[in-house]
Image (cartoon, rainbow, N blue to C red; front, top):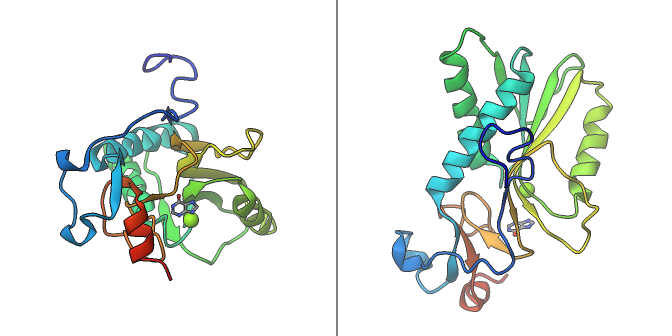
Length: 202
Ligand code: HPA
Ligand code: MG
């Protein structure tokens, strides 16, 4: 992989391969009510935050001179969105550019530049529907940032403009991603085990 600052460095995000064993849960802390429900840690919270900081820098470099409206795709996107916006604000504070940023959940005006923030993109079907809807408002610019992209059986699938990690085709929870509304309070991104699936099945 190209080093930092190289042309196109990080263009595919951090690629987590199919044979990546993850980190043992014993190496980290996590809520006691999830003991026994998880297989392993796929991405520790600190790495999520560090990678998000770099995505914020890339976004500011690309669109920093424009005012942007950040559209958070609830609910799974809220942690990533909050951290990303915080990093963008910090970058803006420490530079000569001031970026006006409004976070919105529904209302859109035609003249805005829109940054859609998602937690995870799989086949991209959901994102295409959302993009079609937002294009009707004729914004000057639409960019999509997703924390995760799942490698699905469709390699020709949709790719967001910015993403943090490309992950195997696994069901993940944590950092606001849920399984039947559970695990949003877990700060690492983890793989759920059979016990966890059975416990929280609806
Ligand atoms: N975890 C949580 N929500 C999701 C996932 C996932 O792996 N894929 C699509 N929505
Ligand atoms: Mg989502």
